[in-house]
Image (cartoon, rainbow, N blue to C red; front, side, top):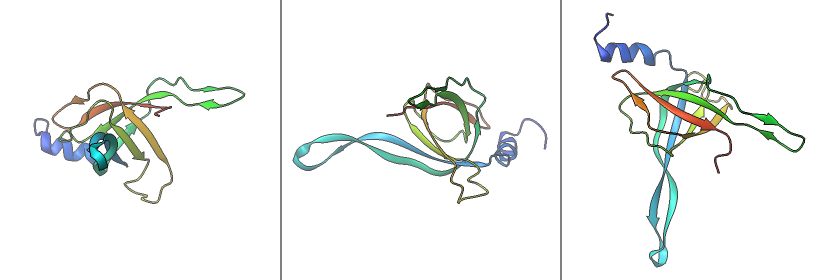
Length: 129
């Protein structure tokens, strides 16, 4: 494989991905009595991806609680439309071990950097409520 063939390069990169993700987005839904409320809906599921936890870690342990807060990057296919505020539930090693209990919940911050072979989605872990 030589450089300059984005589809071949993308296939090679995606062979290294070992995680799976589900992306949800809040959308308005009108219910009874014409009351509109925001509800999360699944936009994409079972997406092959890769997590990079090399971001800054601001986690703290106090006597009362363990506060987890760090930045990370998720590598996804370039064809997906990921928006700021989307939620991503990532199953670590989910591609090879679907029963893996290691699940992370992230929120997308900023706009993804999209390239012909992949996109880099900056996410934040921590208090997502």
